[in-house]
Image 1 (cartoon, rainbow, N blue to C red):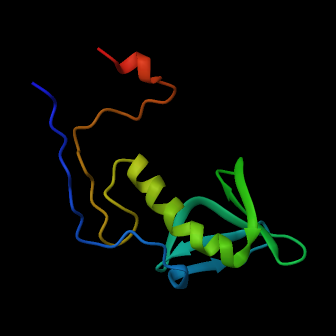
Image 2 (image 1 turned 90 degrees about the horizontal axis):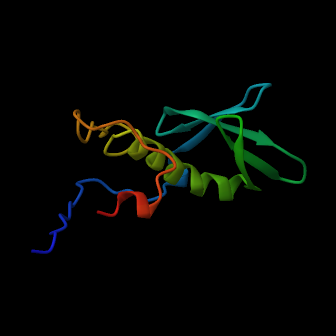
Length: 114
């Protein structure tokens, strides 16, 4: 018998909303907010010529214009929340499974095949 996959329709839009993205400017980089909620571990550093860097956890980053980065921030915030076991980032966020095991990093597809 083949495994059946479950499809879940979520009651909220998971689209990028650049208008809901704010940057609180500080000397050590700008704090990033989506719909007035701080996105943890995410900073914006402004560069020259309208360029900026979006940096995650002080280690990983992407460069682009501030307008381009605004489009990516919602996606990054939702991805971080889902990886942490929540349904989405923001007001409608809820734990998906309170009994889930911890996140496994570095497992290859062949490790999980039975």
